[in-house]
Image (tube, rainbow, N blue to C red; front, side):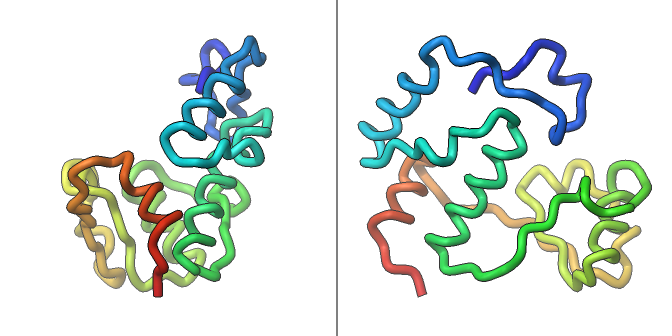
Amino acid sequence: MPVEKRANKKLIKDVLISEDFGWRKKLAKQMKHNFGNEFLDIYAGNKIVDVNIKSIEYCMDKLNIKKKVIKSSDLNVNGLKSERLYNLCKEVGATEYLSGPFGRHYLDKDLFNDIKVTIFEPKVENHYTALTYFDNKEIN
């Protein structure tokens, strides 16, 4: 999805999606072809954070996860990198931090002395199948 120029100089919450010169229609057609759903409601926002949150909420719904989504930008938390992640966990009362596979390269696990850190490595051969899995599989 195209975003505004110099988006890499902004916080995610402030990044705008580029003006629509046909990319939304093209994306909807690709999504419909690949997944049987256009996901127009997900891609309707003007900010990348809105699309991110709608995508997360879609997956949560498909996985029957009933938790509140909290944006870090809504919390008054300081720190950089791992310290910020740790402080965010403490702020929301987390007992475990689940990271993607690259977390092992950047997380300072020593900071998380009272929070369990788990590195999650999904065993997915084709990442396009994940969305199809959500739509075609009943998840308990």
